[in-house]
Amino acid sequence: MPNTELVISFLKIGAFSFGGGYTMIPFIQKEIIYRHQWIPLNDFIDIVGIAEITPGPIAINSSTFVGYRIGGVIGSLLSTVSVVLVPFLLVMMLAPFFLKIKGSPAVRRAFKGIRPAIIGLIASAAITLGKAAMIDIKSMIICIVVFVMVYRVKFHPVFGIIAAGMLGVILY
Image 1: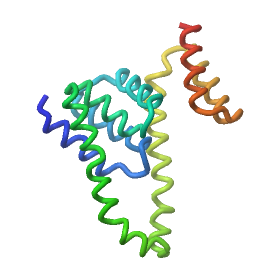
Image 2 (image 1 turned 180 degrees about the vertical axis):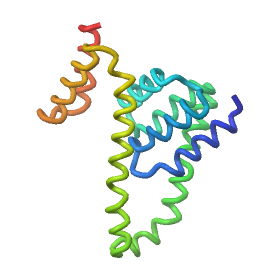
Image 3 (image 1 turned 45 degrees about the vertical axis):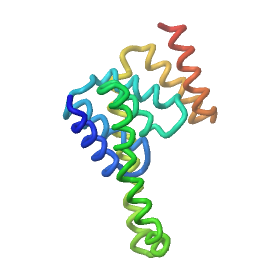
């Protein structure tokens, strides 16, 4: 696979993903799994899991892992730089302007409209990844236990991941 396709894909993902790393997951999924069919969904779920437990933003980590999987070390470098390049340039160019208009009613209304869309993107990723990850009753038990620990009991997500790993060892 030519590296140019990898660069173009991750430039698009970085350019059109708003709202942070979790909102990039559906874009990465669509581009990498469905459009190019470079990796299967189950492998992507593993990559997201690895990206979640390694330090750094999930979007950068997942793009690095996907790039490595597709093109080795060069692929990981290209995908990582590509996914951050457009947002970095936009922030550098727009930050001074945004500071002047951030209090504007139109900008506030635009962000009120963007927030629900971000939640929709995160929910879409959760449902898609959840369908592929829920393979049996054991995986559903792990999901419910971690959800309750993190959402209701307010455990730190890292402890949820550790608990899921321990439950995986015990149940599988």
